[in-house]
Image 1: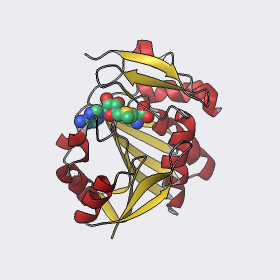
Image 2: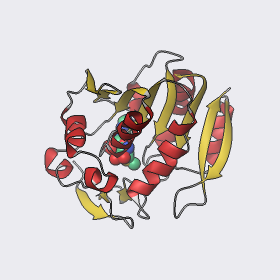
Image 3: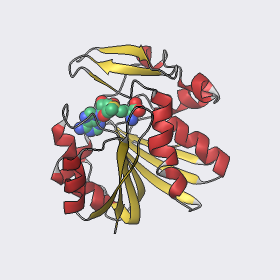
Length: 220
Ligand SMILES: C[S@@+](CC[C@H](N)C(=O)[O-])C[C@H]1O[C@@H](n2cnc3c(N)ncnc32)[C@H](O)[C@@H]1O
């Protein structure tokens, strides 16, 4: 198992360094800022629906889930959040993460997200249900036209090229409902072209601090 090291990013929020890949889980310019910008402001906030189903590549630290839960509480949107994780973190690491404090949310919610059973649908709050699945994203056979939103939070293409393959991005396209949104921090031209080749309409939009651009695809 690869070693994980706790790091502190520029906005004061933690991240992890996977020492095998030498790749961080989040932007070193600010993990919290990145997650808010990429997944909340650039995607979740664009869905004007009372109930939203989300699929995530990589549950990891649970940061995106925590911020989405917080937003669901604020906006009274009902969220069904499915997150796939091939290598869950151990509690020793989870207990050190400062996200509840940094995001200004009751730490009970962060604990509940991590303690939720794998492979079961768990109601964390009246507005947020979580289904964590301990499996590779590539092996998840989602029903077609199921999700409103995909948070594509895999390691970067240069470290984990298989995650960004045509097959996986096609799988994302199929899993989304019409007009569904695929979003990622990544801005690579090759990824943009692959997204287009599987049917997405792709926009390059402003990225989080430290990154000029990122990608958002709409299933059209
Ligand atoms: C860039 S990190 C982001 C994780 C998480 N969203 C977060 O904010 O902490 C990528 C995550 O994808 C997970 N992962 C790697 N390969 C995977 C696979 N084939 N299927 C699902 N998850 C995978 C890693 O273990 C890691 O947790």
